[in-house]
Length: 471
Ligand SMILES: Cc1cc2nc3c(=O)[nH]c(=O)nc-3n(C[C@H](O)[C@H](O)[C@H](O)COP(=O)(O)OP(=O)(O)OC[C@H]3O[C@@H](n4cnc5c(N)ncnc54)[C@H](O)[C@@H]3O)c2cc1C
Image (cartoon, rainbow, N blue to C red; front, side, top):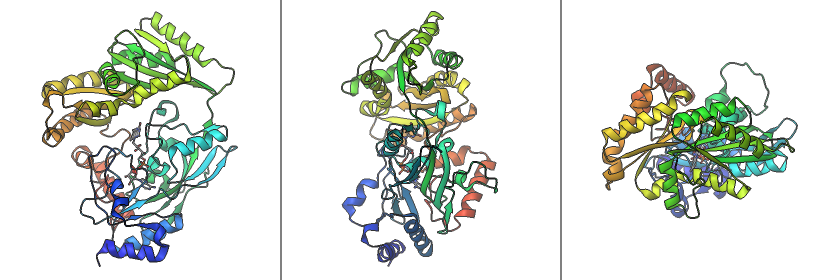
């Protein structure tokens, strides 16, 4: 019997049939990533229901020298949850570990298992009069374990930080099968290296996260969502600085290029342009308040009126209802889908220092279009975090083999521009298998040495998600 087959039968014997899925039709949907760029193979999905069961599986995997690929909702953008194509690894689905173990309104901490879906956590916090502020387009299917393992960002990072800042503690099974329990949520702990912090953003390469203690914040009493037109990305950043100097209410600030808006209007049914005039760039601004009596719409309207009077912005409209606010967000959240409908697109989730992003965006787009005539480069997203999704569409260079033929050269070109600007080739999506080659090419020797040394020290047998993140 091969290693994987031996592991599958050992797990079935120990944990029973519920913990092992071997039907090819049930496995198939989990072998391709959300963007359809990576396809893998696996003889089974192991589906533990408790931390103890995860520990038993990891022990058996180590004994049989069979790699495990942890998977949550499989919404990751870099192929991190997809096993290799040769069938040597087994998928470890965390979706059965979906209990909210506790939610304490006084300490504002919830302890949730790794397989809890983000929307479920939002709903539970809401019922308790609280809020888990991290949110993103995949909230209906991504899991808390996946969010922690990728140190996900999303649209409210400006005010609340990334997942790392919202985690009070982690429980995980390490590659030797031992259980790290960091869930006590103590505020001060200086017992040396933080195991919790090592596991956040480790993309399943250092262990399996089984539960996370997350920080909650007061619920929003009301919000105001505005759509603003500006001439240049630099004006958008000036608007953000203008608003930040006058209020602490802004928590969402998303840049949208006019051509991205046009694609959404063309491909996404039921969408309408929020503004009548045509500005080359647009910004979605969200401001919130936790005070019941505070008129947040009036506050934002006043501030945008002042910005207009100062010549900072070209035009603005504030959503007049919750439905209209949702419609504005739908435009922002549909950009990737609209680009896909338009044709082939190469996505680059990049960051540079916040104040350098406006110039970077303009110059990098021009340089890419000069180097690859016919391709269309543009960016959208979290300008206030210095994080833009810099996408290059095939345009008139479109061809069946465009990704394979030109994709790597275009990505190298973009990544070189990002590196020269002192930025990161992965702002919030991680490295996975998609960016591991570029990380090897561009990371400093110090970073590469530390990544490899940590991996080797914690996972000497290489059984945790091999081929991902660590070059
Ligand atoms: C429409 C859409 C919008 C998105 N928007 C954003 C955005 O704005 N910001 C952002 O940051 N991301 C975004 N993403 C990416 C994605 O949602 C996040 O990366 C998410 O954190 C992945 O969660 P998941 O449960 O699907 O993890 P998966 O995709 O299943 O796994 C992701 C990685 O984590 C590892 N992993 C998963 N669970 C565990 C575990 N319990 N223990 C150890 N390792 C584990 C996997 O091995 C893999 O390496 C978006 C995705 C989609 C589809």
